[in-house]
Image 1 (cartoon, rainbow, N blue to C red):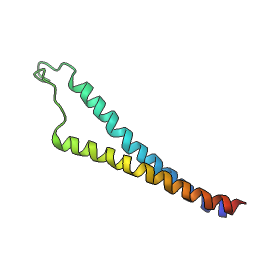
Image 2 (cartoon, rainbow, N blue to C red):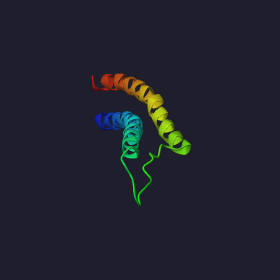
Image 3 (cartoon, helix red, strand yellow):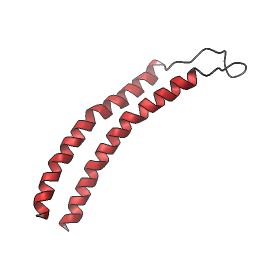
Image 4 (cartoon, rainbow, N blue to C red):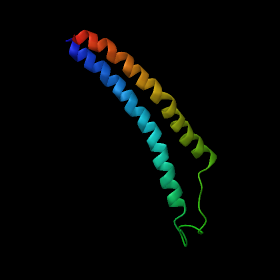
Length: 92
């Protein structure tokens, strides 16, 4: 029973690390794709050929998600390391 509870706690901390990494990678990939797409020629009924850069609200959402991931990743790693030590004592 201790193994199951320890595993459940570890899964929570691993999920925290994974969510932080996703918060870092998703805005970076989205921003790169958006910049690439904005420089593709759009003429005719689609557009007038000028690139559409991200607006202020779009920048706020991109940067806030990125900062959230950057701040939470070290915290998640620290909490994961703190939780591993008690679990090693339980298994011994």
